[in-house]
Amino acid sequence: MPDVFSASSTDNRRPHKIRPIAVWLTAVLALLLIAALLVLQAPLPATQTPASMAPSVPVISVVAQDITIPVHSQGHVRMAREFYLSSQVQGQVQYVSEHFINGQQVQQGELLLSIDAAPYELEVRQHQANLDSRLLQLEEIRAQAEVARQQASENDFARYIPHLRMANSQVAAARAALQYAQQQLRDTRIYAAVSGRIARATIQPGQQVSPAMVLGVIYDDNWQEIRLPVSDHEAQLLGIRPGTEKPLPAVTLTTAGGTKIPAQITGSEAGRDAFQQIILLARPQYSADITPLLPGTFVEAEILSPVITGISRIPRSALQAGNHLLMVDQQHLLHDVNANLLYAGKDQLYLRNKFSTPVLLVNSSRHALLPGSQIIPVNTGSREQLATAAGE
Image (tube, rainbow, N blue to C red; front, side, top):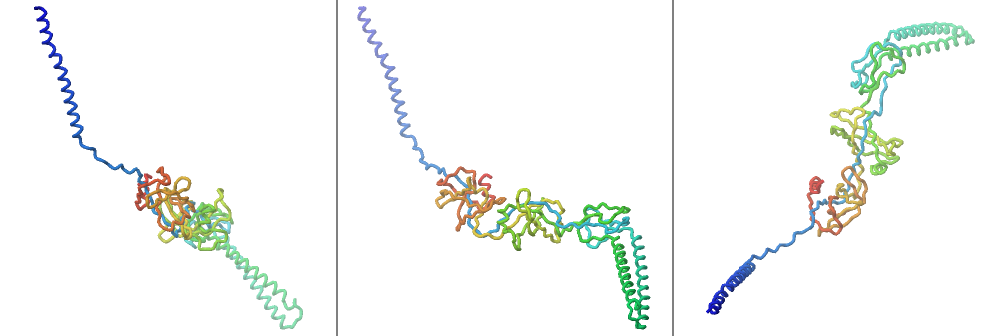
């Protein structure tokens, strides 16, 4: 009996061990089925064309033209002619014009100074009296000579010929002395020789002056000039060579305040400056509405060359390293071109490259571009926009 109960209890526990395994397998199969359904029902990804990697680069259109090239220089206004006021006589200053002050404008012929004229008036009267006496003596000798001529004397002395010669010489000397005294009297009044501005005036009433003493200086605004240094290459570009005939290049002067004044090149100095540059001399051409510049005023000058044919002009930003250019073809591919530089200006470069038809050049040196690369050209049409697009 015990054995029978023992066997039946073991058989009843075996189905309970198999049931958890079946449940676990069923759950795994269900999960696999759900995952398979999710994979099969997932939406397909949208296909996209890869974006182009070509960079956008600013470009500029360039073509050869017949143009004038501006050469820039700078200098200070100085006086080409200075008129010195001096006294020809000695004496005490009695009158000084209210315009005889540094910086005051005076007109030609205006009385500026007068010196005590009393001694010179006395001198004139004395010489006038001497001349009258010599004239009287001459008349007496002439009368005596007329009487002697009627006596038909053959002796020159008897006919008063030497007497007349001496009397005429004394009259001429007395007349010259009188004229000199009259000139000295006139020299006691000092007038402005030209119209201009007074400089270095230090004379006051009561001051003693002497001959050749400098009393002041008049600056004539019509004789101003500016020394403009240029290099040998710039001088040749402007057409200035030894023996050059007029017309010489035109100049535009610009002051610190922005005032523009036309000027004309009048020539060049015989020597060079300390930097071995050629010095051009320019004279301002003032109009009625332009106040003449003061000596020492700093100005910038733009000198225009004669018209030069077949020149290509580009902004400085278009020049690549090693004096090269990057030209863009119709497929937007880059090609390397040597820049045949004629002149480097203040803002622009002038090339001998004769681009007979308009070509596109890369207008930025900040992009790492190589010949053969493809770009997206951005032609904005103006230098300001190009500079903005280039990030400059």
